Length: 124
Image 1 (cartoon, rainbow, N blue to C red):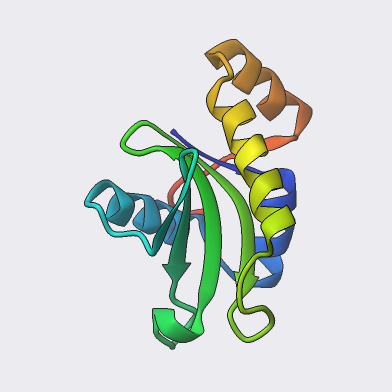
Image 2 (tube, rainbow, N blue to C red; image 1 turned 180 degrees about the vertical axis):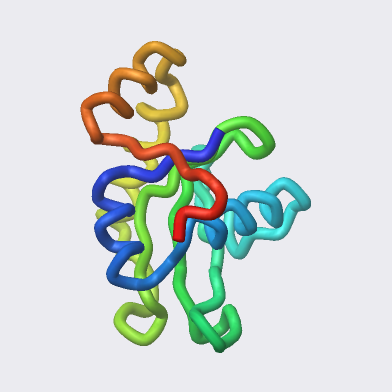
């Protein structure tokens, strides 16, 4: 399953990332294609911006058990930010650890509460 946090959803809407973009990124990750393993099941994955390549596109931070569960945690455009800082990295690792440790019922409750959103195809 693929999820995005409420904060990620808000940021990704501003950056014009679709759920299909996120699904494609997870498929690539399952094939071993990600930009950085930040440790603690946290990964950095580039996603192309509309009409441009990945190098000038977006950077996403994902907590994942690759092939099973993906949680999109954070997104930023390369043009607005070079990378996350050490404090952000630690906070995102802690969030990923917490989310990846949740039971199915706990995840369902977060979805019901609007804290997590399910990523689905053809969201546009």
